[in-house]
Image 1 (cartoon, helix red, strand yellow):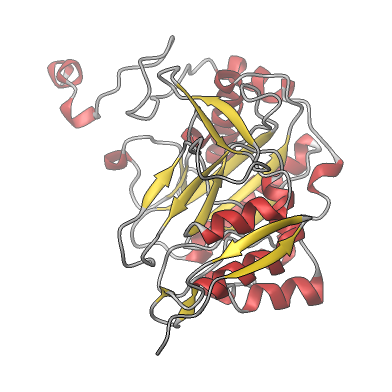
Image 2: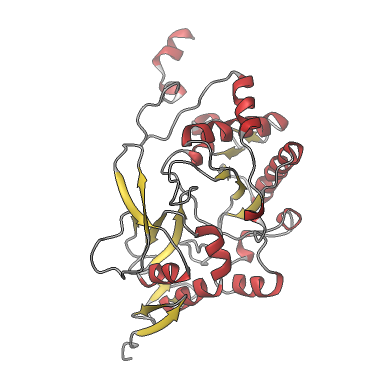
Length: 338
């Protein structure tokens, strides 16, 4: 069969090239590069609500999801359309990179043309890259748990947010997890926002400690839902709303309402069903930018708890106030006390 010719499409006022449109990206269902490209155009309003002006790491699969993948954090200076916008971000090492910073849907389409399957935006805007405006709560089930266990934990998050008077926006992760996003005023730095995430996680854990944990070390988590507070550390990102996931079913990280969360399954949402869902019911995160919350109450909780900080991810330098970054079972000081 002859190779399909490249095409040029007008998107958001820019010309975007689509080459090798028949290349298979998802071998199981047979979804092609054109299918991925058209999916992202179809969910344009929703994914731009998640990505607009956010520095974004691209998870690229040039040979499909069964081929080699890589994370692109630096946009090259050559061979890129002159309309592509970037933003400078700092890694934990304080080295910098110019990441894609989508200003319109053409940026998303261009990334799809480049083999991007998953979009990982920072919780900041390009104009204020050191001040998150999005508090992200990541509910991660430990082995053996099901989606129902995660939605039960998410209900506790909802309860705590309601008592704060805050509005949270849940979405499926595209796997077995659930994410809850909360818009915050961009007045605090990454350390402060991470402390707020820890305070919220601890408050949720206290409501149901038999099923929810904040334990960083896997050996201490048991069969509970882990609230990953380190998703708010610098350079930690989550697949955004309406991003495809690189799995056999081409599932989508999909915004849902709190009422829906107990009735859906992650496999309900994929490359084919999500554009239909948006067309019929709209975007469950449509109002996410209408309010931003003051982080002060959570920072007060953090100080009130008096429990101090938690370990950072292994790629971070040692941080002020951080406890020992060693598994309890390997901590010689703990062993000597036993």
